[in-house]
Image (cartoon, rainbow, N blue to C red):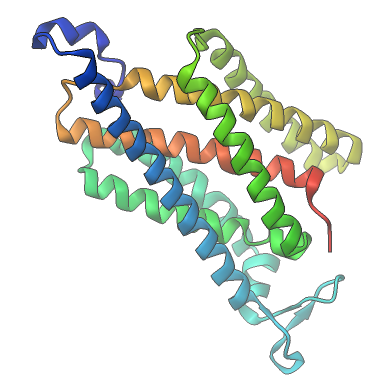
Length: 259
């Protein structure tokens, strides 16, 4: 990850540039990050809808299982949601994140971008189960609330003069604590603990949205070549994508109407 870190200390070595040139380059770089993230979310949404259409049916003769809320699963749905394959569906996106994070330095921009699209599709398949639990209207409503909150938080991270590094380090420790709590609650099945996890999750990923935006902005260096700049943009999009998805998931626990 050496070539993805802050290169501002090297700026004096490439000659002087006007602030206008730097600002224009920064805006183009950030726009690329946000566009990649938005396309990733679009791929996730399409994959989730496609998976749900393949997994459920309204034809009783084509159903192999019926859920408690009356929804009927096809053989694909029974395999994805009701067999050991569900663990593969759940864990595959996590594996892709680690793969991209550790291999991005050795990948071409096109290969890294393709990996990001594959990850986004796998995440969509994994998240498709929310349509089995929550109404479609509440999922859409939560998405737009998340988008508005994310936009405001990211704008704050981009424009603030306050250094958010210390807050980011604290929030990352909070993420590990949150993961441990979620694993413990798999066995406890405590509704009170689930509520606390969701509330803390919203706060943590709200803060991380601002922190990651500032970090991505500071990673920009006008002297980067197209390869390094492209890799940085993809990793920045991945970080913001993960912030958005986690914020959406935790908000859905509060705002979602269950089937």
